Length: 257
Image (cartoon, rainbow, N blue to C red):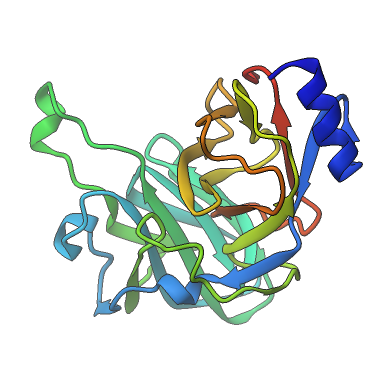
């Protein structure tokens, strides 16, 4: 992307940050539009038991807390979980970080874990133990959590052009967000995803790829034939970013942490 293209994009949108065009979100769509068929189980089930090789699953359970701090302990979470309590983001967990302290008033609460399978091992001894998702014991405040509702999330299969979007509001739980932007088509354009958490992104209905804030690279190369001069549509799914003012950016070079 040459300097002329950068300036033209900036002129069309008139929203520049450090020379990069900012892509603001203006609409949101609830994740319920891509819910698969839910399963109820006394204990959490791995993705394998749901017939899923990859993707996202929502694990939900009602829990009772005595008030104050309670430690959430997971026996196995593969590979990444965003933890919500009563629709409020509380933190993330991985198989190397399997405890999280939750603070809440005494009473009944809704515990929600959005879990992603980052990838499967195809070599070495761990190929024999390659379950994904949430499975095994889950304890909160030392008490076993039972009675789970488990819902596959068909995020990567979603037709983002067909989702029903409304005005942008606070996404207290994960949702799809959409924005529009004008930009002269050009070669060598990157999408800067820094500042977001973990999720997926599409432009003009084309799936671009996944992002994760723990990766060194914080940009995705946009194929040369994706961008249009006017009316580009960006759709973002993030399992932990609930900032209504969050934006992505276009860059003429890769972005690294």
